[in-house]
Length: 299
Image 1 (cartoon, rainbow, N blue to C red):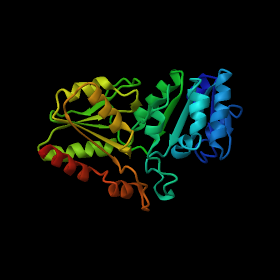
Image 2 (image 1 turned 90 degrees about the horizontal axis):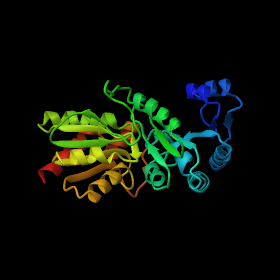
Image 3 (image 1 turned 120 degrees about the vertical axis):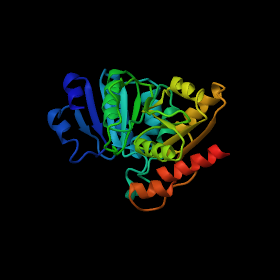
Image 4 (image 1 turned 30 degrees about the vertical axis):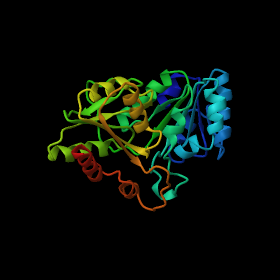
């Protein structure tokens, strides 16, 4: 982001009382374009809309639940209605703030953000996707929401990859089924494929860093060739990646087995523990998913 702000004096960075020991370099380098609005996320988004109306390109940064839920009306009415160049960046999506309770668990952001007109939704899985998604987002005018999570610290990219908005990437080949994931559960998807491989099932793994617009082409291509399509996301099973893929399959008349794996619908997580513990309780671990996929294929 420092490079982007250096190259473009129209970029402003707003944060909602967040970024201690993280954002100081931005504040020091660009003190007149770095604004900490305090714990006032709706004001932050409305301020961003005002700056955008004056020709600025504005980033709003906060914890994902607070960047989306608290200022949702302002995002809808001030930013999306006017199709403004405002980028909402939510950090710690899903269970990435595991010990802070349900207020900090972001389980519905894909659903509420992708329904907004003009809004594009990004969920990079690891460092290359995050870097390239940021570049693409900053080059493209209009509203964006990008969810960030803890990187699995694995390099999944290949030399042939060229990042583009609305494009998915085949991380691992496989002729039997396709597993599509978004965000930083890509390592779980790859581990699931490894378990299935040991059991004689070849699973293709696709990373989908753009939730909206979804890559319909890659979904259609693999649905036509595979026995089944499965999705994995650190989000409610309502309204997120799984819903977007399911809609694509239905609207294109693709008759393929389909199931989605995500956080339990219609309930909050009240358990306390680290992220891995919460994901395990939610059924989002590779061993459990592999077993459920095998069961669905047998049926």
